[in-house]
Picture (cartoon, rainbow, N blue to C red):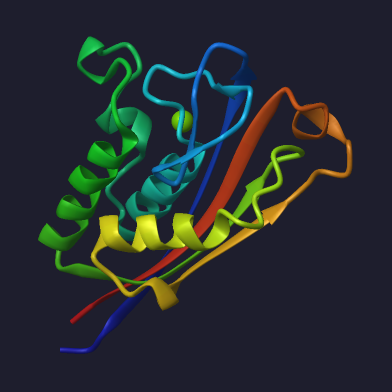
Length: 161
Ligand code: MG
């Protein structure tokens, strides 16, 4: 059987508000604002989840975990991602590598990139060296630059066979 290599992309953005805790990639981040969402608002795990679903043709996170469903209110996104990696592996795929960009004007995430990579690697059952986390400001431009939100773009490669 020939090896199938597939690639998926994911993007998410959530609004920053003052009365929520900030969690990125499953890692609690000390900051005076957090991300609003039906779940915990973890844009990083949501983007990675959508990239995995895209690579494997399994749909998107909004279809699987609708924000109109009370079961997912304040859901821990680590549980959502664990469910999704289970579906990915059940379809015969294994994650090869993850690359992602966190778009955040604040806080500075340079110290958090490694813990976030470790967290994602543990959730997906893959080596940390295969998960790359980048963090960028938006140079003051747009909703990210104005500190109204934090976004994440993720790309995942998976293989089968
Ligand atoms: Mg989301």
